[in-house]
Picture 1 (cartoon, rainbow, N blue to C red):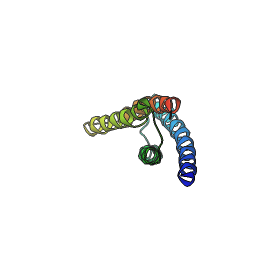
Picture 2 (picture 1 turned 45 degrees about the vertical axis):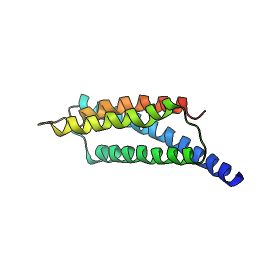
Picture 3 (picture 1 turned 180 degrees about the vertical axis):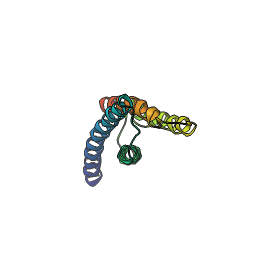
Length: 130
């Protein structure tokens, strides 16, 4: 029981640190994309690379949350909604909408999605575990 408690504490710490990094990353992606849009430039490979990294980080964050749940953590329902369900929905919608674009700026939907996911994941940090 004590080993499981220690494991839960370390998973929670990783989850929190990664959560903060995710929020900062989505904020950075939004600011970057807004700058590109205002200067009428296309997104570079670095922009798209950051988008991929952030999407993967959200997936890893979900896995860390599931591990916490398996170890006895009690997340608030809103934590899952803000941290996983809504961001996933926003990103799926962006992928669908972007696929239909005939001309640039292809990053526009993802830039606005970054703002939404920034807010949603920030709110997920506020709800946390009970």
